[in-house]
Length: 488
Image 1: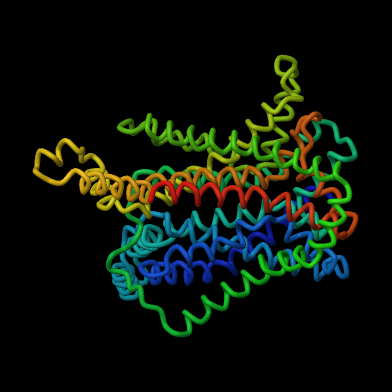
Image 2: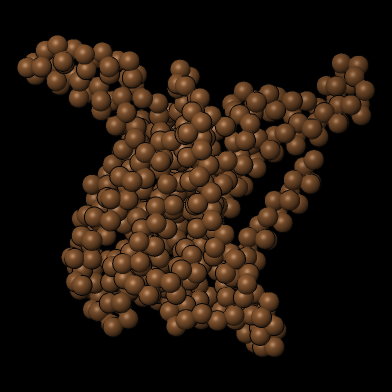
């Protein structure tokens, strides 16, 4: 299959999956809003788990079954992509601004159009109401889901389904000329440009809006809708998380025994984990800091705030196309001395993370309780001197100050730390940048695992994959736990 056919097939698959995912996203958004008061964090974590689970492990777990039939491989790839797309659509819906026109206004316009079916003026106003009433808010979620499906790499490669991303990786292996590679990359780039522009316009619209829920909307769900939401979450968690984890856990004991007999293998794996962790921390923290700096520096400047999201387009184009562009950039005469260093790797990851950093910060803005945060800041400003001047016991003032500090950490600092950790986690999992930009002196464990997974399954490989992805996650959870204990 040539590149044009692979691009068209990937685009058609993405479009079909978006149509299937859309009603599920709408239902899950209503379900999340309905349970947000009682079980919000738990429900949101369950929804995001299939999207945050490493794609490489999912493809590795299902690869053996997919190789039995091309049709089964396509169905497996489509199903796994579907459960990875839906959380993105739900988050985009919840982070989008409220509709400017209510459903009642759209219904009235529909009645007027039915009363005057030949009036072009009524038809124009009706379609304008449809656009401002729902489509304008919901279109970015569809676009982001389409980008996730269109830019998929690991699943398509391991399950051996048609994809333009796998075509480029295969072309890199056979030594395709750099100029020809850049010319061929115009195909997927041109297909993504309308989608990228839509996301940029949405970012411009949403950056100054902090209220995303309509207070008049109904948050009650029928029993059938609640059952369907529970059924989807169960299937997504089983297929996207439980099955790959159970496969790795089944082979873990024997694999660990084999690795312990080979100390060099274990030390090499730990070195690869350290390298990937340091690079992901640098890229994630840089992307988060740059996003915050740009947002603060453009406050009160409408012209700058209108155009700064254009810088998100390179990152939205996908890590594969971005990495190929960075490779070409650092092979120029003036930058060639930096090519075999971590600088291109970190730079590509940082640019790729910028749109995700904006989305995470928009999400934090929509979920932050401004009143609670303000009260916690006021309480934390109380000093022992002020308390003693008011004839209050000094120990009570100190206790209140500690409680205010802990509350302020939970409301303001902890979400920020989790957002930065999420960016670093995404950088740690990205395969395209490490595949094309990792220096020769800094071997990438992710690339090595990806290459070995094409040759079959083994207990040692399963144990290495489990440790490579599990150790940083456990380390991050340990840091969060220690911080929470210290701020009690």
